[in-house]
Structure formats: C-alpha cells, structure tokens
Image (cartoon, rainbow, N blue to C red; front, side, top):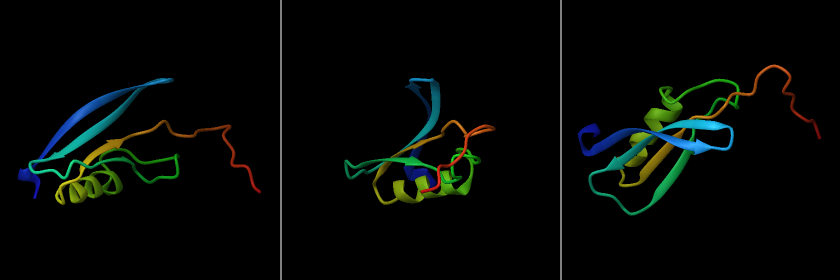
Length: 83
C-alpha cells in the first residue's frame, strides 16, 4: 500500500504561526482532496498517531489525496462552555 503513496512533510502558514502537516498523494488519484485533523479533542495527539497517519494512508490508498494537519493544543486556562 505505502509504495503507491508519496508522503511529504509540509508547513501551512497560519494566522498564529506555522501549522505542520503531511501531504499523502496516491500514485493514481481521484482528484479529490481531504483535509484531515486528527482526533485528540484539541488537547493531545500529533501527526504520528494512528488517528492521523493510518487514516491518511488508508484514504490515500483509495485514490484520495489527504492533507493531514496538526493543530495547536488547548492548554491551561481553556475551558469548554456547557450549554
């Protein structure tokens, strides 16, 4: 599966600094692009966790180009608003 997918580290310019990402490009693509933000509830996780890497590789193996992006984590002082 992986020999048919090109994986490239990329950096996306964000309003609060650079956002690391990976571009998963299949050898034969459908023309579709999916932007994927891994799970982790915005408090943990990274581009190497299965939620990011495995999902992106699996989708790319079907012909979909995937841009997997990391994100800034919510840290101390950030609270959810209950409704």
